[in-house]
Length: 193
Image 1 (tube, rainbow, N blue to C red):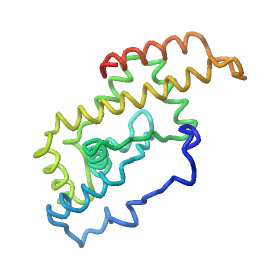
Image 2: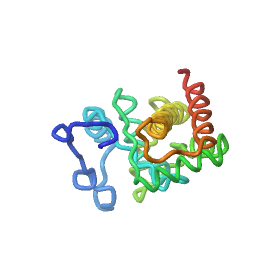
Image 3: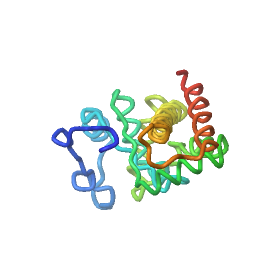
Image 4: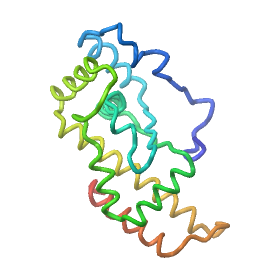
């Protein structure tokens, strides 16, 4: 949270593992539970942390629970925050530099709500049904990838600002910075900024 200068007194962490069992195979929830309780609750929270690890194939894009929570947050006008370890962040930035558009396109194309997996296929199907009936898979995929582009631009811009600051102890490779500027521009163009 230090990256975003968030007041630690304002931080509330909701651990869905303790409030909603994603693994208890003995309790089935009707579709009404998802639409009248779970979905509005996620929207009311207003923020979701997207843990982008491993950065080359994020697990969050493979799990329907994560994709559903992203969908609900974005649909409700909430904010998505990006989180990863420092090492993973450096790896992600290096992958963007090395792979340029290929890596970035590969990362963005990994967002396919309809391929989201769940240990509980019945619940996964209910989440998919809600998304399909609301904005459809293409709409949800577009919404999530657009947000991911914005998050990547923020991350790149933050890194470039730190690396080019006069007080920066570590001078970054100019070629790498040039590639990051380039990718930031490509992503900004893609989201219409």
